[in-house]
Figure (tube, rainbow, N blue to C red):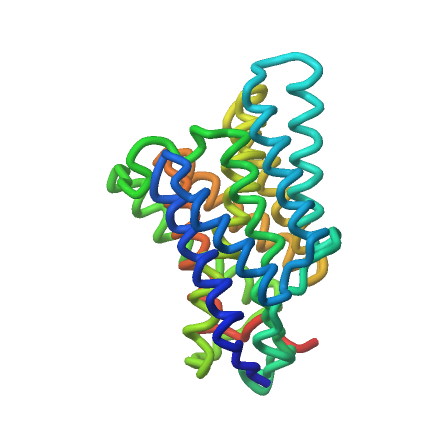
Amino acid sequence: MFIFPSTPELIVWLLLAVSIVTAISSSKPWWSLPLGMTLISALWVGVLTPIGAFVVIIGLAVAYMTQKFSRGYWYIAGHIFVLGWAIALTIHALPGFHNLLVLDKVITSPDSVPFTLYFNLDKPMIVFGLLLLLPNMMGDKPIVWQLTAKQWLGIGVGLVVLPLVAMGVGIVKPDFIVPSWIGWFIFNNLLFTCVAEEVLFRGYIQTQLARKLPIVWAIIFASLLFGIAHIAGGVMLVIVAALAGGLYGLSYYWSKKLTLAIAVHFCFNLIHLLFFTYPLLKA
């Protein structure tokens, strides 16, 4: 069932979308103004409580203070706190957020399991916290991608092979469909889901690992963690998600631009929705 958001609710997520787009398209923290408007409107509408606002502000404040240290106890403690805060928001473990139910157990095709979609307010907050922690994450000219022809080919091949792997392990099958709610899916998946996950797994985890490990191992470990994050869908989904994470990690490493990893992540998810059973094949 599709549940159409009210106008005040839509305003909250439109402001959040502006905040996200501003954050990933500029190396400057211009996102602070639309984010402030997002939080105020969310409090007014009731999708955010004062406790939730406190949770957000504390995380952002610790991230901002931590980036002022280059080493030492406060640097380590701050990173641990912000990473824990980000993970807790990702799994919706912190109080004060009333995420918006948009799709309630819809069936995209006869062979698919039911799909439920929320517009989350908590998970996207990690984007701003991690950008405060690592201010240079987006780099200069975030949406300018410069890759070799072989690298572009590698990304294209990966986007073709990954769905075939998913078919091979039995979690999807070919099933072309354009659902009536595709616009809501694109809005949510591109701006909130993919951005938040890439900022966490590639922008933060892979980058931090690469400071201590060879890049190959940094990509592998970040991808394995990304796969494990999908454990609710079963072991086969973990495998496919980990392989997909490897493709996103390579995209980030080749381009040095997180926006490319976000775009590749979204392309894979859209291919999955349009051409295969979504979200998964019924057992």
